[in-house]
Image (cartoon, rainbow, N blue to C red; front, side):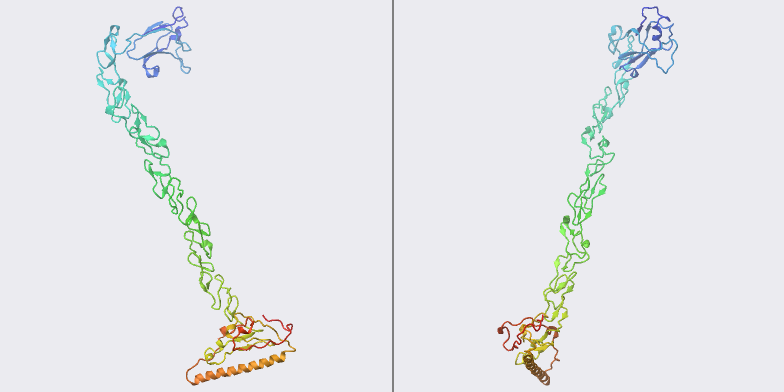
Length: 515
């Protein structure tokens, strides 16, 4: 090559202003326009303004597509005093002599290089000075070693499935790429989200798809919630959820979401909430907490799962769920209390005899025997003559007066005994006009009472004398203490064998009616 520098049509030498600008230049030969990828052919380190010629001939024993002329003046570097302070490229002409195409030499570049795989040979002698891509050796007779290809065998083959099938000239992988790579040269990793042979596999549910290994699909940073396994393609088994399936579903779930753990199929009886971690509210239980607790003694002790009352039932109820009313004649907590036998019917909660008492009893529980001060005690023939009445010729009723004030009395048969301890008198006596008549009637009645008593005593003695045996007479006061409740409205209501004392007295203002 030959370089012509600018002279400005002035004598060349120290006095020419262009001379110091020429000093320190370099020449590179490269196959690209980047000098750093080429080879340094010449570097001026010895010329001065007195010795450098305006035309320079240079021989470069190398091949390339580009010849680069370069000069520099770096501010942080010192230069010889002859060199101009600033860098200039004042070239007039740059001539390069050689064959226009590689692989030929000689006059007019008419002869091919002697060696078949020689790319560049000496322009005059034909000696090989560089091989074609993919070949090596003194005469370029050898292919590149396995794994190498290209210019001077300086390129590395890509991720070929078989390196022996990497083309020594252009690096193409003739047998395809290793798993995880693609392209003719097998140098490109699979696209994001794919992996494996020919990048045909899809990555699993990796926590970060950027961390899905392009060769085997392994999720390097773990799995997303709901999946497990090296490839994160296995859904969490039943009962587990979350990243890596390490979290356990609540045991009260009917099946939880493998990603979030939410109980998407509902809760077992007795539980509620998104995760079935909340017991049913007080007073409810069962599936979806839709059942209402029974009459538990303590609602906080109603089991949230099955509704069982753990502390027992409130008064009036029985059963595990305390939803069953007490049976008749039972009351109280868990129906353990029995109603008083003297009750006609008691309240299942309190035991109060809300339907009244049997004859001869009173009080809210019918536990008090009737006691009379301003009334009359009636003893029926059934009670007085339990064993002997069948021998009596006449039905008799014994009446004991327990009052000191005179009053009108009706004598009743056994069918008319009242069930309450209350006496109703139809008409009171007048103390001034009817007292004598009353005492006459009373005397007659008492005489009749004595005769009946003697008759009963006679019957008892007679039975004993015959050896039949008889229990000592003992009136049954349990039912004896009953009270006459109502007056007869007409004579047909009374047994014909009983007599009625007539009403005496006309004035109703003398005494108050007894209740």
